[in-house]
Amino acid sequence: MAHWLDGVIKEKRQWTERLFSLRIAAPLPGFTAGQFVRIALDIDGEQVDRPYSLVNAPHEPLLEVYFDIVPGGPLTPRLARLEPGDPIKVIDKAAGLLTINEIPDVDHLWMLATGTGIGPFLSALKTDEPWQRFKKIVLGYSVRQTRELSYMDTIAALQAARQDRMVFVPFVTRETPAGAIHARITSAIESGLLEARAGIALGQDSSHVMLCGNSAMITEVSDLLAARGMRRHRRREPGHITTEKYH
Ligand SMILES: Cc1cc2nc3c(=O)[nH]c(=O)nc-3n(C[C@H](O)[C@H](O)[C@H](O)COP(=O)(O)OP(=O)(O)OC[C@H]3O[C@@H](n4cnc5c(N)ncnc54)[C@H](O)[C@@H]3O)c2cc1C
Image (cartoon, rainbow, N blue to C red; front, side):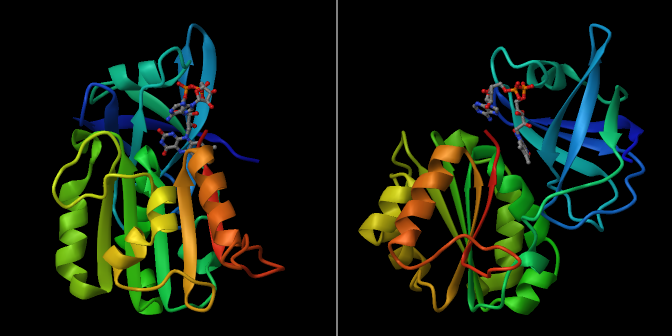
């Protein structure tokens, strides 16, 4: 049975008025990069908990979560008010299958995220495993406005370390900054723009696609990929698409 661990906030980073990261000290026994934990606060005498992906790699000492305030949501407005030194509860067992060890052997790994869905991909990319297994990794990160592209420092460090093995493709849907695709992930797949930017083909022979974030993107991209003969990956029935829906 899972138990709640006593954690404490060590660091807080505010990216925009709605986007935050918290670094937490808690004695989590271990996890696989890409997994999530449940975190909880006591609110008006009741414990409220939600799942959050870990952004840190397993070898990094502090747990890190990245979230946005959902107006009217029970937990996120409270999470955003936490400061270093405040207590927080963390469940003692991480879960989830958005992990590299679940991905079949292929040449190219595509990690496509909307918003805070970038978190589990950064955790995995900070480990050696994906770089030992795939020839090229494409990280697609879709936001509405440029300033919502959090963790650009981490992404730049990953790119510097991996050079031409990693292609980073930012998508900014409501602005037109240089270097970003001004379209949704779905449109960029349909038009061939994503493959042109990545310099490789997105197809069932060579690719596995990991999708994380909002469910509309995940459903629409999965449908588009189905037209290319790509299907949901299951342990018993290997496929080409692995997903985690946040909402
Ligand atoms: C496996 C898993 C991992 C998750 N990891 C993360 C994570 O790393 N970071 C993160 O920010 N969220 C993550 N979520 C969502 C998170 O658990 C909460 O639902 C979210 O933070 C809102 O919490 P809340 O209590 O304020 O509102 P909730 O009561 O959870 O949600 C209120 C309503 O808002 C919707 N909603 C939830 N999240 C969003 C959002 N981001 N934007 C718009 N609507 C939303 C819900 O579907 C619901 O209808 C994850 C969810 C799952 C299932």
